[in-house]
Image 1 (cartoon, rainbow, N blue to C red):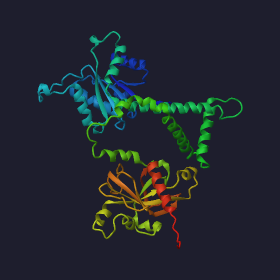
Image 2: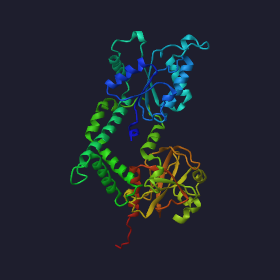
Image 3: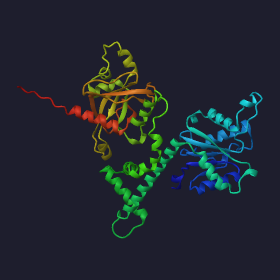
Image 4: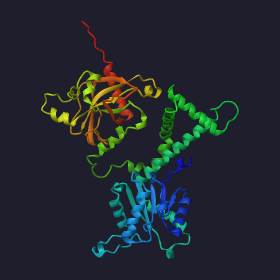
Length: 452
């Protein structure tokens, strides 16, 4: 149970007691929780910390200097701080950060400092840190030069070292906002827990358990089991959290950043930025535990020979909806485009276990150099190109477009995934809703004969 709280966001890595005790005291007086690592291999966490936002790092953890010190500290950092978390502010806090590292092969004016040597050594040893770390410096005076009340001075120096980082400050404000939202949800659940068990007063732990049981049961709508209950509770808790994040108080917590946020970004946005960002906004990974035929899932047709059993048409007939087989471009199109199916079933049917069949519509994923825009209400496309992060079946990751044709729709039994399909990625709820609404409108078209 206690392991649920093991998620440090600030880490101090220093091996000298007379150094790390003052900075830990300063962080404590700033009411910032932190974890300390001594630089000894036996003190490393079992797996690297993946939620760290700020690291105070001494460069000399092994009693050596120069290249040996840089190599040891870089190796220790890699084993302490995960490459998956970002961005991380690394405050190099060392008495020797600005000292030059002597080298006979390099002129004195071009020799690296201890800090520069460490940064280069770390990024060469682990390229995944590239673009994820922000290095800043904070001076660490030698023992004879330290002020009497060094702990108080350190608080000011910490604030100064972290200046001029408005985007990082906003991300940390967002992180705080989410944590505050979780706290508020916990407070609200504690209040209603008093009424969760009628009759005589019960322990809070019993009331909270009953509250969560009621929420899981309400979301399940009959589909409640030891397997589905956690998922149903998580759905409700997420909705409660979103309510807190959208509260006016949440906006107030980041309002101080309005000045720079409202300014036009400098320079020209790189050509791949929109697609990269759209990849996150429009799509998400497949959760293995989510189940089969989850709404929004895009399926790769891995065995096209079985496609006719569901549609009465060949896969080539689906591809030909965008480029006719008689076209001179057909060979390139067939080589480059990936036919897919998109699951459109209502999420409530999945959550409640009422779904008999899965509703799927045919579509295509193609490199962004192609156009899938077609006229007529039988066709649609995701409005913007996006970066596909998951290569599959010979289709490489890259910028893509996604189109669909409402004439190719089918239902498949929801209880077992067809052996000719493989889940690829998932569309987020709003893009999915746009496809679902267009599909419903296409299905509801009315045609009739009349005489004048």
